[in-house]
Length: 305
Image (cartoon, rainbow, N blue to C red; front, top):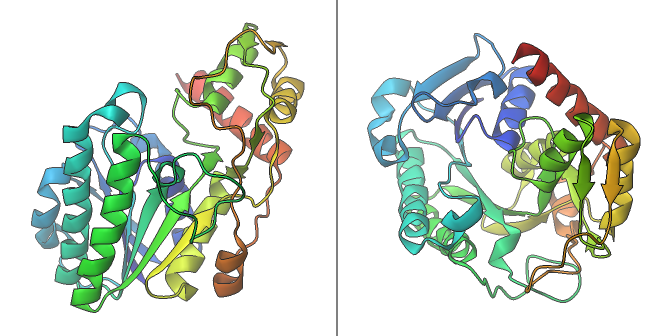
């Protein structure tokens, strides 16, 4: 199988590429020019790195030079901080997603798999399912939802199988510095006190390698037009996860030092029953093992620093 992966140096994408290579597949990995995260990518003769801006995606066919089987679309600008509320940036991402479908058509791909987000739902009651109504509350969530809907329709017109996975809280090797996992672990590993809210909210975390496997299985076995929610399928109090981080990283934690956000989500959990039924996906890596792997990665990055 030949796979195209956009946003290839991001956490889930780089984990997926490692999985694809281990299963004997060839990968064309799209990254931004001079990406600071190139070290996230596995070094392999089976991985062909293609440097291109998102706006230049449609010119990339000539750089690949052969037909491919599946395109995994992860590339997205403005995923953190104030940029999530920037309508102009987020709307460009919708067009880039449609460009990715166009590229899939040019390359004669049979399957398109896109990375959606929990932000598409907004605040909802109960486990998040593919049928949970979507009421996004920021520009990021609105753009992700629009990208999923429009890319599905375009793929249908082109006869390309379309699958959209709405991702909850994934952590692990290659994660961003601004996430609760990496920012907290860095403080703890450096002997600083990590401060939190009371952390009573129930949360669903999934390790990056499990998330990558879900994307892989969805490409192979997912139903055309399907939307899947992606998480571990289990929720525990956030303070329990924080204690596991402290136990493995050392340092001190302070619960209740910070207030909850005004629109704090107090329950987040994925219903993965449809994903499991269609693809056989089941998480394999528990949170404590995932945290150990993440700590080892952070220490390795620091030592190579």
